[in-house]
Image (cartoon, rainbow over all chains, first blue to last red; front, side, top):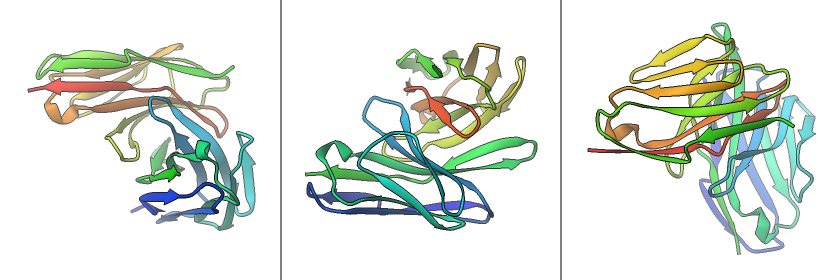
Length: 114
Length: 108
């Protein structure tokens, strides 16, 4: 079965520090991968998506970057965190299965920048 | 501009009191309308994907339907464990446009 791993679950980082959040998918190959941020009371904001190794599309100009060094690994990074980077970060992937697209999320990382 | 709007923002139901959640969408080149359930502090849990007007899908007490402009999530005889935030999203080529969700509380 396919699973998605995202870590850490919670993170408290000082302003100006670097960030690295990692997401890996098991049980599938060549998935589309996504990073979202969810602010309280707001919908999920798509940050980056990737359709293959080394292929990254950015949806929102910001202090963050993403990389996909392996087929099933997606990394969200920042060189210097801002207070506004606080939020709930979610990794997701989708696949075509049984005549329909299904999209699955990791359990998220709660990032607090202090 | 692509947009997904959900209503109501919050809904309180008595156990067994059926109701519907609404998702209005404007997504160019729609390639699926998705429904999720999200519990506090967790990632969204996939429920359904709908593609064509008139399509319906069911899972336990939930049934999702789709028209050309809206989708509905019908909850029949809800139980307290159905309490969660329900999200819908329209998918374009690769991008998913999410609504802000409906917070459902089912009282015993």
